[in-house]
Length: 121
Image: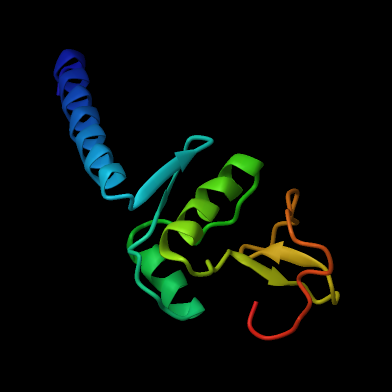
């Protein structure tokens, strides 16, 4: 495609994406923060199913890295009156946590004495 044709295709795609995002926002299924889009089906699932569904959607389970991203996840927790799984796991060092990809966490906003290791966190 010529440059002007490519620009036209990109504008059309941007328009379609914006319309889809708008529809999903109206249904309160997505929210955005920090250039990222957070989405939910609103359905309950176990952790491994949630991780798999995110991968199938070409995304990843949420790993909040800022207060805004944490608020985006919290929006769903409040909307659906449930918990949310995060892309965080305990490292080989007890009490130390990393992203599922292995990166060190640079942001946490846990309650005092959490995670406590009690139940399924």
